[in-house]
Length: 288
Length: 245
Picture 1 (cartoon, each protein chain N blue to C red):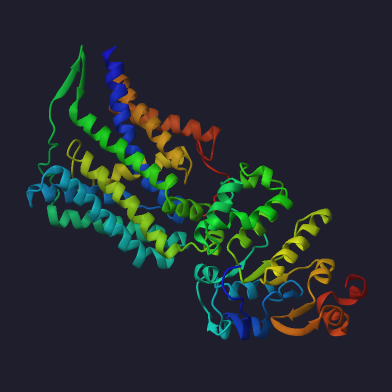
Picture 2: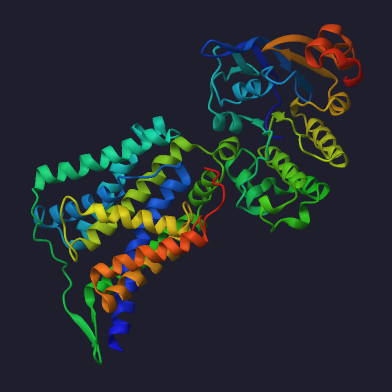
């Protein structure tokens, strides 16, 4: 029975991580109409910035995580403002630009840090025991930070004027600009916010999993899968789909083994999409 | 309407897409409170004229002035905040938001301001939207979506309102609401430019009209006189013009 509860805790923790990644991914798609193929690159970059801040500058880990968020958010902001913005309505161009950025980030990391995974471990060790059930402290810390970040994103999107403007732009850009909203001001902010979330996740998770220049590859696939399952552009959909993906991965891994877990995940997503092609919370027609 | 009302002046406006001339040397002045109809056959450049004036696409030549201020090529959001606001042929609402949120967004980010609710209450009531504030806008009947679009345009506190086929898709019985709306906003000193194919509506609302043909101004003047001109009849509706206009 304790396996069941262990899987549940891992599932929630994984789901929270995926939710942070998927929220960023879906924000960019929903608001700008851009599929950000560089999302995994910002995740890996976040990990390396945190690693460099800890090992190179001697910063404490929480400050290193903050640095990772700021650097990835700033890079995303600047890239959107000066590059993406010029081609924002050209889907093929933005696809190439984000894919190109991902390649630049991953090859840049490879050139600077080399192919080997650096020694970068999570600062909180140990576990709590409840009977036969053991809960790793690092999982709880990651879960708590991700939970707070998700809460902050929801607050920003649904309780602030910035969020109201972003939702308006996602809904219908033409109408929003007619009402005085400024895409050129808001698009880079949305992009920077999303890439900062990817950087935060990278800084939190790579010390537990692994840090390498290609660490973003599976992240892009998982983010894509999650937002498609939740419905492209849907914030609630991305969050719920992330939890579903987290639970499926965790339970399948515990009861069926690692590779079978991935297979179960893809089959379940395929079945759900066959029943609901727009995803769990997707719209038939997207206005953005 | 806040701020001093100003003329909208369009001088020598031209728009080309590559070798295609869509607008050529268009001139007119729209004084505060005036209602001007713009008619012409499909492809005459009517919607492009609105797109250029509201900054959706820059002109190839010519100037657009609001009072003495040259606003040529200004972006849409900046013109909106100056009081130059448009509606679209299709419904121009935030489709996933309810009516209340639609209005709140329009007020919050435009020059209308959140205290503009009271200004909109009569319109919301007259259009039958006051009782449906919690309904998602794309679930409303089409006619109400169009009316909501007009409310949102008015929420931005326009000095100049450019309406692109406001009666398109409306039942005949619903079209009188467009009349009421235009009368309401023009009484506030807002000038209105209406692109419309419904000639009855144009006759009712527009003392003056401007006829575009192949991007150029074919005629401008009092509605009855212009619609009686043979060249306008020929350009606009062809041989059956006498019946149609």
